[in-house]
Amino acid sequence: MSDPVSGYNLNDLVREAQSRWLKPAEVYFILQNYKEDQLTHELPKKPASGSLFLFNKRVLRFFRKDGHSWRKKKDGRTVGEAHERLKVGNVEALNCYYARGEQNPNFQRRSYWMLDP
Image 1 (cartoon, rainbow, N blue to C red):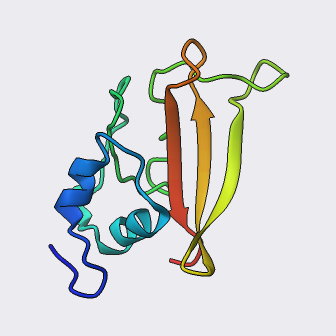
Image 2: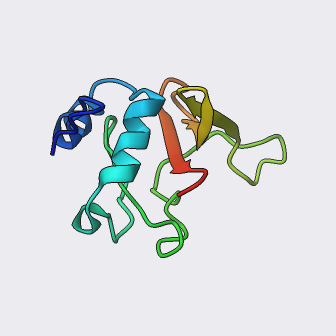
């Protein structure tokens, strides 16, 4: 599915996500244009680097429990996540949570959702 205004193609973006981080405008396009059948309904077990999943976080509440060991906060109990708001154009449009792997700090998980769906 191509969008004549943005020039993005949903399938191309999903493919490109396997080898690079998507830009905020690209993530926003995916979140606006996915189809219901593209949602993941079960937790992935130790997903490989470059994996992309679309969850309804209200249905699959524990989507972060993917089997990987993520770096913990100083309390040693909870995962240390960085929280950011990302802009698309000049408007804050996305929330993003980053987590780093416990054994490999170059291994990251990023979770995005729209601020105003």
